[in-house]
Amino acid sequence: MMFYRLASALLAYPDADLRAALPEIGAAVAAAVDLSADERAGLAAFVAALAAGDPLAAEEDYVRTFDMVPEHSLDLTHHLIGEDKNRGPALIDLSEFYKEYGVEIAGKELPDYLPLMLEFVSTLEADEGRLFLSRWNKVLRQLHANLAAAGSRYAALVALIERRSRLVEAGGEIALAAAVPTSDPCLADGDFDPPVNWTLPPAGSPCAL
Image (cartoon, rainbow, N blue to C red; front, top):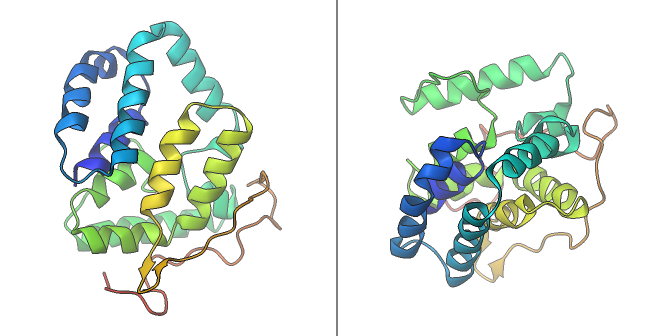
């Protein structure tokens, strides 16, 4: 699904390769058939802002945002577990989950790295991808809240991903908390307890992995 591929690309480090691909990404945003009007407008605005900005400033902003602030980490289990010893087994379990779909991680990124997860979701059917992301909705909400509190332009992009992670019931979208406090994912008594279980479908799920 094109939305997830586009979001994955735009969450990557804004190096020369990404900047060179921006015209192609912008064209893909305009042509994609699986985007809502809000998603198309949000992705197009993000592409335009990145293309118009200073390249060095964009790279520095990315490093300051994601590499220097733990609360903004794109490694999602960090928000669930921090650097606790249990994070290793959780990452192994997620890697094994990918392997069940024939996906092997060839690069250096961890299996919970959000752009990599979005690439994986882009290979799934729509309901299946939404179900997988629904396991991470609470983390995505928190990540969005943390980025928004910092005034990061990446908050709007994560907000679109978070919205896609909401399961849909017969009566409409599942109600979610409107306000989320900024978290410290390194605290053992943080907001995310118990950790998300991505291997079991939640009660009432429309489909199963």
